[in-house]
Length: 312
Image 1 (cartoon, helix red, strand yellow):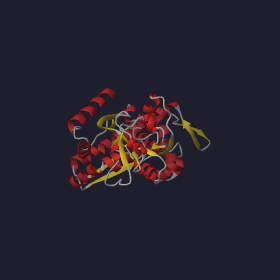
Image 2 (image 1 turned 90 degrees about the vertical axis):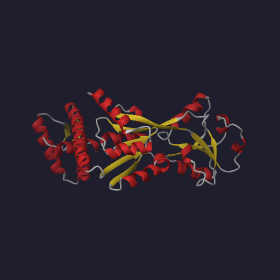
Image 3 (image 1 turned 90 degrees about the horizontal axis):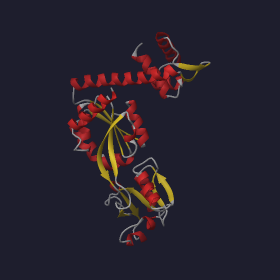
Image 4 (image 1 turned 135 degrees about the vertical axis):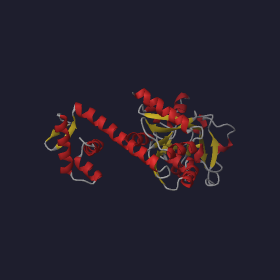
């Protein structure tokens, strides 16, 4: 048994049991992967896959357990590499952040700028996706840190910590009738077509919950995955927008007006996520502290250690 065999197995599972897709991802040949999987099965004395001719149809029951163990072993091997790199040179390496468009566009730029100035030899990558994709990237090891508002706390395999709270706001074209309201209400807001986030993004469940609790059915005319698209269609007069307050920048959004909606929708909490049992390098801790100053290395380390102990 070797790590290469486990890597092949892991990639087959990630690619829906397609050996050809796994081979393409790993830049190797299909026969080579098939041979190594058969050798692994022979060494373990069990079938990992149910086969339909030459096609892999499913994981066997023991195969499911083996695939889980293999994934953990590969993550631990990655941890060992991180330890070596940390003690070899603390100023070089790679750090990948998985986050949403709103965080990448509005919350992270000053953090990224400061981080790059302090760690010019660290290769920093930003992967954008929805909260589910972000969680999956952190769990798989594709990303070191996840930052999002929804869903992260729902994954038992992740350590999540709160960064900050934020509210939604309403954006409208200049001279819109809603600007004449002394205090915006959900009833008044629901009189207009609404453009807001896709269900998986940026506190959308808080918006839905507020209207539901009030017994109001809003006219959601259009949904999008980022605030820039929402604001574009508001400018075109297609409706009023509900976006994260951080996404309204007066000096840039000169063709729109903002109305506070903090009293209409419950506050949302942006969280960072790290995989349990992950070895996070020093500059990773520093990135987190730049983003959320209250999350010091000591606090994050304690959370990772506590959750690692709970998992034993």
